[in-house]
Image 1 (cartoon, rainbow, N blue to C red):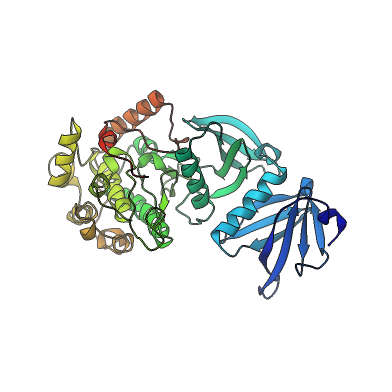
Image 2 (image 1 turned 60 degrees about the vertical axis):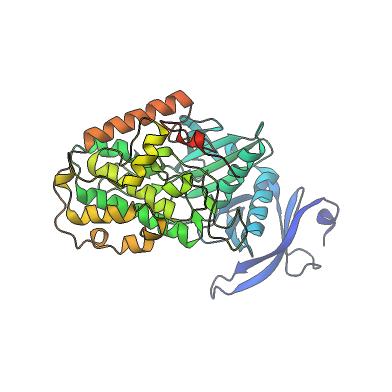
Length: 423
């Protein structure tokens, strides 16, 4: 190994996989990250085949699992880590070694501000692509907040799906974490529905299908979102048919993180009151079914403009949960029977009786065999009221939809205050 590497402090070293350009066969390469250079070796003890000065190096997240891309001098090389821990270790080490978000992105107007960070509209200096940059200050950050940050970063860098907001870059330093993601120009789901003037069950079905596609993908990777709500469903543009994507993984968790690697239940009580499933408030654990419940609540609101469960007090609210959703009265005559049946399956009190994401996507109402669904719904006025209250709450708490606080979500009543945290 050359003296320049030997005499520098090694920050990280290890084996990574690299694909061939033609046959795509993977070969193993040994990389060494020192204070000033990154070196590439065929064998651990062999001299470097190339070295890159860290001042010239850029690291981006690949579009395949465990892939990151190193670029310098107009050339790029993709590497694959062996596992998630190794992947995050390399990305963090490379990102923190030489650069900040301002080196690659020009920050523009503020899109939102929350308890722990701000979100800015930014422009890629090389491509002029618009992105959203979430900057989270690390100091002071308590242990629980740090746990949420690490979890959000871990999830955002391992997911890749058309119905989940894409993470473009992450810059992790001792003082701040900058998460660069695609800019969702359409904004929040409900805001766009309100301005559409003409909303139908067919449009609600189209949106629900995409939400469930994102949920199915997360569940297939043993990830539970735990905070699905309209503010966390963003639109790629304002053009119909909408392309919607899930965002905000501050409350998400990997199954098994709390209770052991083989458990498929979670214990921490998180979420936003009117969207949390009954089992979250209970003393037992819960699993992926909580995301189906929350998706059902979002659909219910889209169809009738009201929450399915309501109460002036926490006790009244919990009692309303046990009675199940009401699907009669104002607005429900416009909704198909197949749509009502689908909702009932999503909002089952017993999570074992609830549809899975896979089952929901195969339901007749979702895949298109239901009767014509183009009747105009009367839900827009109700949606406007709910959206207005959400924004007022965000203004009062200093949290906007574009800049979620990392931790427990705020809500319109204090139901979660009565719940004991176990994390």
